[in-house]
Image: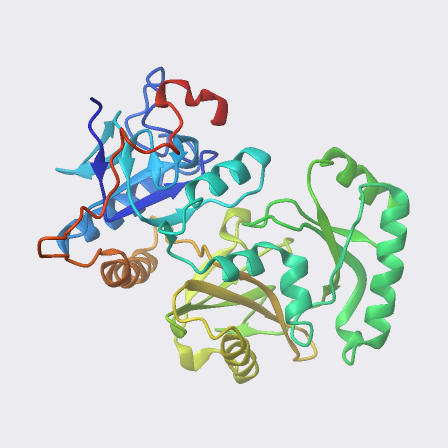
Length: 389
């Protein structure tokens, strides 16, 4: 009988970024391939797992490609003795620290399978996850704070024209319409990390059409471009900047800014932006007030999430988006960023200890907190799981 490993927590990462421990044919010795742009995540999650171990949490890392049932995965990575180890055996946890979004049909299917039983709990509230995963839904829910947003119903010229017409009406009715330029932003409705985000002259319809037809498997929204090069000034550095406030248990636990590189409007680190931690006292009052109003509306005490803002050149604040998977990584060349990122990881791990540890059951009717691998009817045969990976 195949041995089943039980964990208090499973970190389930996107198969697009992490490598499955089940893949015998590859020679990877770490979950995030060496030489890839995600290699630094090995240090991040080795610290994460080490922090879990120090406080008595049994934790491991696996991927969305390994999902074979509700709470079950076919293989996993462990970190101990300063090394990553592949374990080609099934594992289970009723508590999932999920680091992947249903951006493809495969990922959607795998996510549904992973959480197909009510006793399998994600770290983040599913309702909040769904709200922030969909940029149109976020904009609709917080229209008074967000940049006007319209979805493209189809990836064709008529849809672009219809959406631009609807957006123009929203801008005309907006109390601060002077904040918006004639350019528009076209972005992946379900994207992240600044990927598939484009800026166009609103009159250049052929260019817009070209991009969305090349990405016809994606859904897009459009927004007016906010002029924000001079809206926020930090250390006398006036540049395109977004402001992030990170919440845990409904409280702000971290604040930082991301400054776009010269000639770039996207502030993400993956797009060359520079991340700088700043104290809460340095956050503009208009942003802090707006952020706390949104957090109050959300009234969520069981999630880690981030709210991102920009300040227009006219001094008005806008919610860019919410994010239930703010990055735990850091620039390996910046020691201060490493210190701050590790603080956040330790806070997350402390919450995992509270939320994920199953209660101790004693007495004659005590039952194991984990189901039997061999008797669970929901599992896919781990020898034939290539179909879902």
